[in-house]
Image 1 (tube, rainbow, N blue to C red):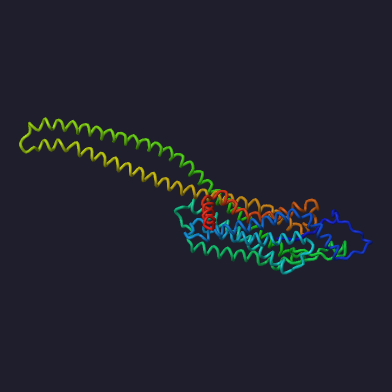
Image 2: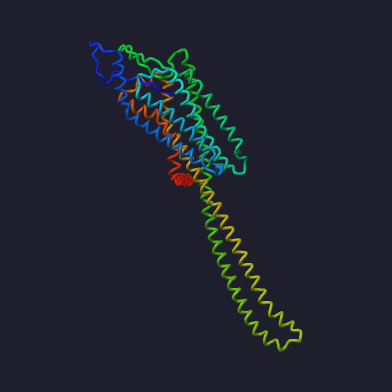
Length: 421
């Protein structure tokens, strides 16, 4: 996390007259206002992140934690991810807004350290929740008969994720601090402050090791996410091909069942005709039989027994077919819901990778060049700062994706707001 701003003074458009005595505070305000005006579009974007992230993630938590029915196992981490995204969005966007509006006047050392610490902590925890969700989906779809995540394991994972985030973020308390911008004093004789990592050459090695560690952890997350969702995508593709083949088999089976039912109906009709014919013959034969009438009773009951047996067989086959069809429909519906949820997580993870990519690149640039922000041209400063804060978009996108793609989430939202009305 870097909140430093050092304008390219050879390109700044603030006009000053060295021979005119100007109050240092007024001059600092003039420089600060000019740079803040340049960064105003980014400030508006950060306000958008803050409002949408707060409202959207609050809605997700409300929908999942206020419901009376127990939460489904595959959605256990969703409200927790929303909570981490909400806190991360508020901390990162709020700190960024202050940094854009006071680019040369960030003189609160405690605020600087806490902003760096909390920003890294909740960004790491949020990213690790995405990682755990990917692993859980991988186990469910690619290892369905293996050991699954129980509630106890999930709670233990939450503790481990939190501790790991603390390990990664605690060093930021010692690395980031408020420092004076030397160029402002050297060129204009005024004090300007920025929140940045210390440029003490004696601690340069430790800073480099820390940033390399963050870089390695981020790349490791990317690799694991690619592995999990790559295998998941392949399994979904194979299941789709299998369903297509099974669909053709089911259609053939249905046609066979229908023809069998027709044949059974025809046989029942024939039995009825035979029964009626046999009844007329029984009348004729009744004069020829003995006084006990055994032959007449036998001939009269045989067709009736055959027709009843055929009806029972037909009804049993129809009930079995309908039961199999209903089970298949329920399984197909559950599979579609599971696949839809997996696609949602794949999309969210893809957005995470895209939004964190520029952050990783700028992290490398800052590690290689300690004065990176001082060398950025004035005309490109807004673009670079936008790329530097683009990772916050990952914290606001989840509710948007749920609202567009998750039918169950939309239904729950509608139910909640209908009750409120």
